[in-house]
Image 1 (tube, rainbow, N blue to C red):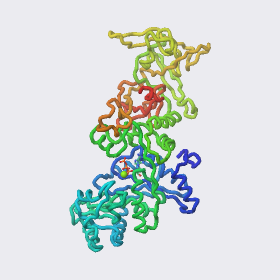
Image 2: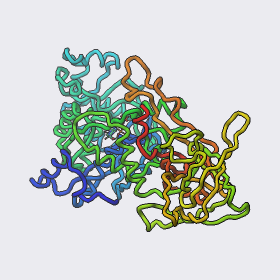
Image 3: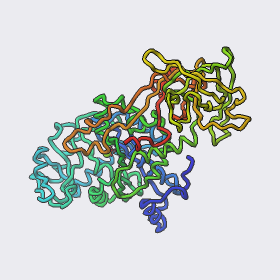
Length: 559
Ligand code: ATP
Ligand code: MG
């Protein structure tokens, strides 16, 4: 990792708490965890949590961060997601070393703790229907009332729980609940569920269990088992904290981690809840979880986002308790900064038109030399073939151009990047009046793009040699939604706001010859933006590039 020394990482209120805990001697060694449920792919919101938790582990002496799969819901969880999550965390640059855990590793211990709660008269098996449980719970203004099953004997509860575990009952027939207070002002404390029946096999534990623990019980106990010191979660769990503490206090677990909440990341013009992402993927609104338009880490990786850019973004947005929506441009600026510093430059014509140099010998070819990065000579140079017929960008020629148009129009001279000065002499048009060829003459004394006589040209345009060019498809992406917060539009489904123009494909792009051997890294196509090969659809002989991001934030202007 490049830049994660503690001095460079902006502090936040959570790091302040940790500093104080170390100072006071409460903890010598900090242990955090990132606890994804393997029911979907990770998104940029998860990256905030990953950077926070793993970042702390990197910056504090001897600290560690556990990766724990919260696999308590076998109906929705798949090993495909587990593999993808691991790949994403590693890609972001983090390492859990040998601290890979699953909540299912603790099913025996969790069960033993549940038995202990029953023995302490702090849990009971309820046999009300789901509907009645809801009615008995009350609401924000009305207290709940006790279930008629609340006073079952310890023995009866133990017997029922064991039989639930063994699969003697149908789903929904019984529920193990904490015995707290049905009149508690905090509804989470009104005898919350601990175990529910699910007659379902589990990827890790097979058919051993017919009951699976609820999040509020499993999470705090798993944290305690792993001696997590600071359990960092998003703000919606603030009202669950009393329950987190209640379980650990009642069970007198050897460790009692401190839950601290922070605000989740929201980004504009996209959606991040896994439920919505599932809808988009399963409904075919996008092409899979790694669609380059999605805010999933696999989609962003495919698009060409770099781990550096994402970590930089997470450090810039910081960690607070204030809810807000971050503008996409903040993320894109982190991306641009990283790409500008590191992307290899190349010449590529996206919307080609022929440029013919009439005074250049017909069969002549020569190699010109281009720098791979204007600010990093250590990245070297490359040979770029030049010949009589080139492709240039259609928009770099204009008939009757205004004075300020420093590109090609009859009589005007421009510099071809790394090559020569050329002066436009005339054009050829088709029957419809469309320009099909731009004709120029070149000055052989200006090789390399400079003139001995010191005469200046204002414009420099990019080009590729027609006979050496590599043809490619380029996908250009735009925002996935047409409104900043598609999920909050009243009475409307968020999918109604999908941007139908979120991808456009250019099929006739002409790239410089060196891109035939393009690798996985990002390129800056000069004057165009940042691009990378699409790691799914690109093939030798049929290259497909993704536009990662434009050079500047032209989107804000367009709106
Ligand atoms: P979603 O709400 O998108 O469905 P989740 O919270 O159910 O996600 P988990 O797999 O439970 O997904 O999340 C793992 C961790 O990532 C949790 O600690 C959660 O708080 C954190 N996390 C999820 N979304 C965000 C977000 N947008 N910003 C910051 N942290 C997040
Ligand atoms: Mg969750």
